[in-house]
Length: 134
Image (tube, rainbow, N blue to C red; front, side, top):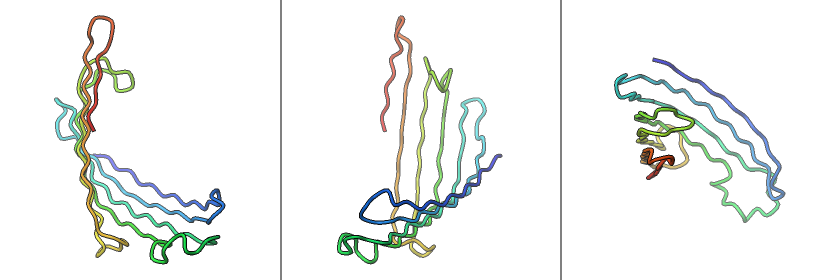
């Protein structure tokens, strides 16, 4: 089992219409489920905050959207049988991710997201046939 923690803070005035303060904190654990099929499970918690200020046109952004919090739990299942992850010639790569962002845990809104991706690599003569569905 392995884990990852990250923290970032940013203030930007790149857009001339507003200034934005962005913050993100996350914690993730990963566990190998099957060594034979290189299948892994990742569980993650992520909290981020976006605060807009110095709006040049105040009516551009609703008051409730100027300070947004998202508190998200997610789980990702990954299966990777590619021969070389950065230059694959054969194998499969698939992911399935479910994220839940509930208001009772401090989010500005409640929503869920399901995302899946599947890629297939097969050598055909001197060319690699690669496709992806996501």
